[in-house]
Amino acid sequence: MKFSNFLFPASMDASRDQQIISETLREAQLCDELGMDMLWLAEHHFDGICAYVDPVTFAAALAACTKQIHIGFAVAQMSLHHPVRMAEQMALIDNISKGRLIVGLGRGTAYNIYDYQGYGIDPAEAYERLIEAEEIMIKAWTTENYAHKGKYWDIKLPLLRPRPYTRPHPAIVRACSSEEAMLGMAREGRPFLMNIQSNEVTKHRMDLYRKTQRDCGFDEATIARNVDNTWVWRNIFVGETDAEAERLALPAFETQQAFREAMRKKVYAEQGLLLKQETAPAARNQKQHSLLCGSPATVCEALAEIDKIGVGGLILVFRLGPMPYEVAANSIRLFMQKVAPQFQRKVGV
Image (cartoon, rainbow, N blue to C red; front, side, top):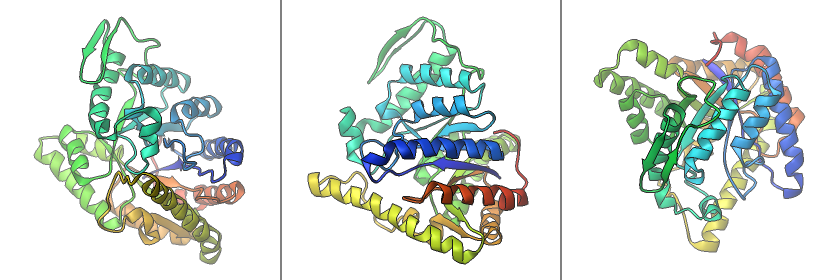
């Protein structure tokens, strides 16, 4: 397995935004120094759930202040981006980072109507916009004198500059919150990002992902490569002992979950809008499924269960809710010094 830090810092008070952003840069540099494989960035607007808000701008800052760690989006909400501008920005960051960029794309949030309202986008259009935008970006990276006339964009451009550092273009990965979306990626022979699920659901989906690719005629080398570039999400905290880890992590995790739930309730109370109706408790809200917490030995045991499933990498959130930076940084150090070495990790992505 490869290991990554999902930089998803909450700022529950607008007066602390700058501090949280600065600390998140330090967190990224620490992961780079310790030899972690990846950093992932989120995109959420207007609510403090993600302090740096814009993953594109933040990725450029990370590309300039890190040396070897790869940088990806989990995900950029493509319904909020112009595809040609995004293609230019990705090509620039790919050049700054010398090929360390992974372009993770998604339809957009399923929980916060503010994201769409703030940009004047109808959430019902989000998936169609994603599909059209991805096609435009790939063609813009690889085609001269490109013209496109679609439902949302009418485009004509001679040559996108700069050309991507990675040829023919940076790697693209799609976020899949549902099993059906994952099956779509399997049928196309593409890797994907899985949101927080129980180990049982994770195993079911990964087994089905492999089977679907085989049924579609992909060879075993291609399937193995796609699995190697598929990532699953968990929250994590490593302490010196189980008791210390629970004391430091559980209150922060519970505060994080309450903060996000309060935002959804606020939107519903104000506008009567709910973008996604959940019929069963989501795994992300249940610590037994979403939080790996304990001493290095305890976390190793939990990771071994995921490793047996067969995934490419883990997207790990180390800094939970209002957790102080130094507490999260110590967890990262313990993870990289005492947990990660217990697993055979690949170099690169």
